[in-house]
Image 1 (cartoon, rainbow, N blue to C red):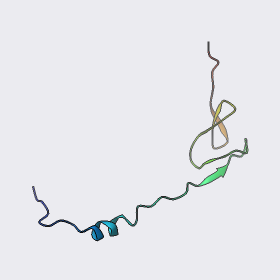
Image 2: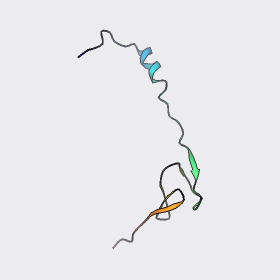
Image 3: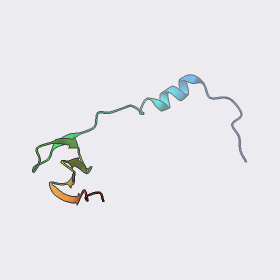
Image 4: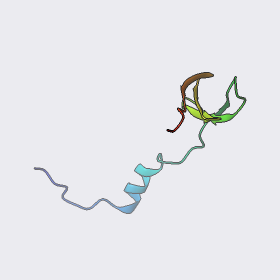
Length: 63
């Protein structure tokens, strides 16, 4: 198995890692509930699960 002959410098590693940065998530407003949520994710509002403005699942009553 090949191994590196010399250790990579800290500067070389830092150059590679410059592209790994945190970005703010894109938010949008739901058309039916007018709630702000993360895009392309389902969200809960009043016990119902919404995705793209449609009810996907409802909370069932606990027995």
